[in-house]
Length: 197
Image 1: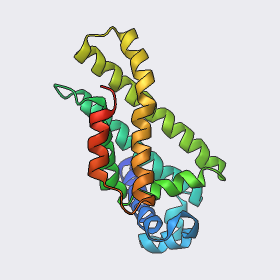
Image 2: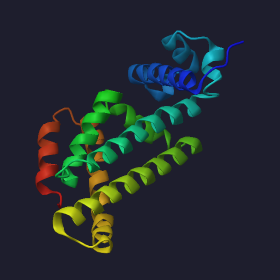
Image 3: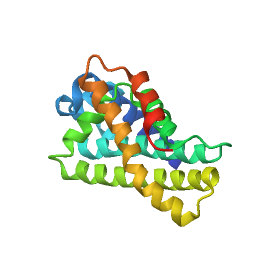
Image 4: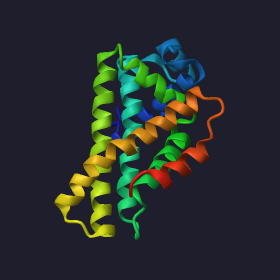
């Protein structure tokens, strides 16, 4: 029997995650069963369960992939010269979420699941921590390069500003989901204009 490579396994996990996202967008987390995800993927139950033993594990895998990609986005911005001001990173993150996830309401559903599912709650806590760490590094470096602050000064300022930046992304997700009159472009422009640089 031929050996299955890690690249093949990763591609199959991505295929399953994409199918799960499509199903979640269509019917929501609660209403989507593993059978729905299996049908959406076109794979066998064994193929799905070989990678994800439960729906919670699948949700964690999908969310981890999305968050990992956003952290990579932040790291990529570090190489730009000049660096993008931290408030403009919100636009980059929102655009990437919309591109990869589609409707941000899926993320709001995930946060709701975190209230009652300990596995998803752990994921949410870890996700916020990883994003804060990546944003803190970025913001600190931006202040060092742009304002000539020492690393210690830039770290302190970044620690104050990062919760605002993260809240701006979360605010976009919430308002775009619950406010029919929400103007995403105006929101992002205001974030770039008013959040501290």
